[in-house]
Image 1: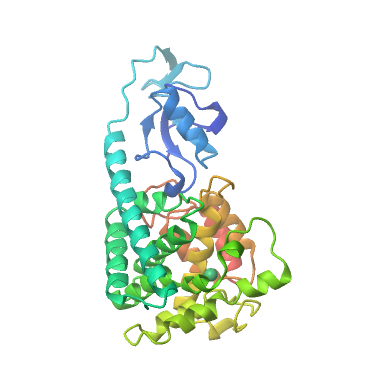
Image 2: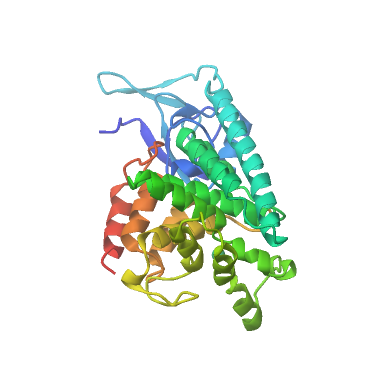
Length: 351
Ligand SMILES: [Fe+2]
């Protein structure tokens, strides 16, 4: 049972001196490195208010309340008001910075390598599969060792690097998800390869169209939708690339209800690896933080993606969000989902 000194407040009420018992939402949306901590500076408050977190639980026994006083419950149950003691910065801040720096360095390096790989394919030199496998291994290790840091930095996208960073992010997400599902190591690696290569067919699309802001015309959309087949064709001669990887690239825009492309596959005709890839692909697209577009929080992605009936495998969608701890106030990977989200997801699993 939660202590009686806990109080849930809206994010706008957060202030210096409060002790945060827990943030509502996914650990992916938590801008701090620890679940419980003191808001020690205006910078901490600003950082919290810039994050997707919308509400939090504060502990009145350990920090200030909304009125500025500290309410403490004595053993006998009576309450008194205490003067707040000076606040130290959270000691884990430097560990957070170190982890994020390492993750950012991995993101920078793998993005650079992916750009070079795609340029090789674009100029007709073919795919350097050994380097591609190395990039997948690096990302697989990084997401295993520091999932939160890596999956946090991969959300940040720049306009120039968007498509490369998206591919790196999807590679990390499918690897993380595959391991959460307990899949065989070789399938996890193939998922990683497909995550990295799924949009390789976009090298055949004019860059003006790829970077075009706003809505596409019907003709432009039709051209854009050729990229899965173009990717499959580009990878067709890669004898050492498993066929399952090519198929994931070809079918990553299919939908369970048959309204996807290029083949309009439906239901059981869409393999489990393809279903996994399509969830991770869309999740990264909607939660990416870009300078010109608002990102959805992981909670919003859960709420909205759950409503897109017919697009995803509903059971796998539940497992995916469990794997990134959405719906739980816990920080751990695979943290238990809360009852509200559970009920919501059980509801859609029968659609
Ligand atoms: Fe795509």
